[in-house]
Image (cartoon, rainbow, N blue to C red; front, side):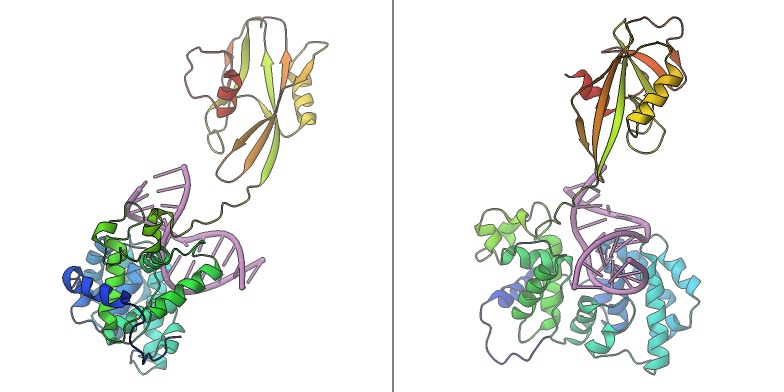
Length: 353
DNA sequence: AAAGCGGGGGA
DNA sequence: TCCCCAGCTTT
């Protein structure tokens, strides 16, 4: 909650941010011309998850077609979504349209100038509501979009991933603490511009930053370490059995995997959910009277979404397969030989040992 | 190919 | 309150 600040700034953070804005801040963006709440609102919604350069042409078409709140509220949803095509996150367009109708019907068509009311509208959260009223009305609210999160996380060396409630609360605290007593709109724009152009995710241009002398992350020598990344999720563990079937020629039996899923379309060992499935397969496909099954050391593979513990079982036929060396979907593979298609990581690591 | 992004909505 | 999702971009 932004409160009235009657004391002078505790530090010169805001002064430096404002001074930078006066020299380098953007003032030529379409929504900065006649920054009415409606125009700023539309721009802020479009700018969620989307960069300025992408937004500009969409914004211009949108404003041409829906120059004011009433035009938007009256439009058919399809007409709104048509202008959103290609921007992504289409619920933004639907919510924008819905909110326009709510303002028309419940607020007599007058755009709410009160942050609490604004936040109740679909598509408008705390940061977006603050940005609209700051930029269009110069109201003293703090924003906290991705750019500002980066600037503050670095300046204060805030540990933790901003998605965590605790980290987010700290960042909001700093965002409010640094607000200037005047020129809030310029300050808000400056924070966004600094985040977008200086305090970038990778290769921040710290030597050009007005905050470089006090930035804790920079003083630590590693601004890129902030904000913290999301903790790696604990991956589900899966187990499977792989058949390493060898013949007397020193070749290994491989199957082509289905086109989708892990190792899609690659050549790999026949894989089974468990030993029972392996035994069934062997009985159906191998005519030898007695087979020796020799377990090999377990191989662990980590994918983006799970960890696979693969139990290889070696079966040596000690015979040379009579005729067919290759069928559709399977073949006998000699280590190092040419192969039309890739090998799964499991097979590659098997042959490296 | 993986992460980031502001808010909505469901668990 | 937490978690996942949407869709496109950037790295």
